[in-house]
Length: 193
Image (tube, rainbow, N blue to C red; front, top):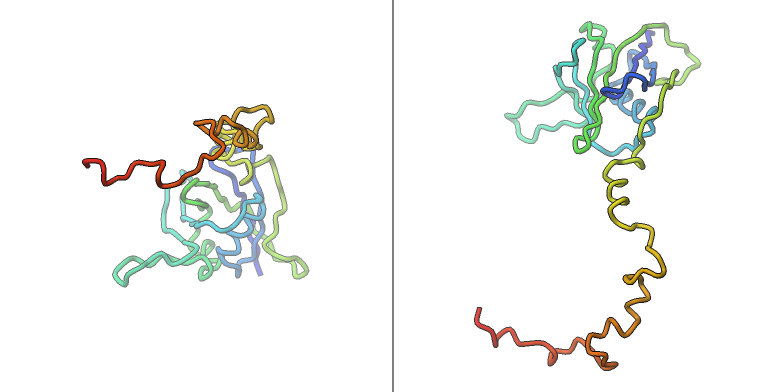
């Protein structure tokens, strides 16, 4: 049985890659999870492969799940139904892989070799790693949010620390009997709206 080697590179990041070997009878879904594992990306988001050419134009889409909702809609090819050998018979050496359509992580997947699968190996198998890829914890939004807002609980001397609500400053009247009772508020029926 044949095994194919694919180099998986984040778009616009030529120095970062993972080489993954996968058997011809394994599915695109197996390749999908191998890519997530190789890049330490938490699974759980939508993903698609696109058959591509050398200039990375999108061709036929292979989705993680069937996205067709109604009978008349186009049914896409589903990852777990399409074996990797299909790319060899179609002479496709380039794929685009898109993971998480909100953050749009895009990878170039290029077939770089073909060999005989070893019986004692567990496939798919990551055989080469180069460069570091930002993990889910290094998310741009999360770091921007943490830079803008104090997410570590603040300073003890901060005027808005949890202890400031125990002080007299919270009570606007300085009255120890302050409460949110109905007689302290206007009745909405007394106002013209």
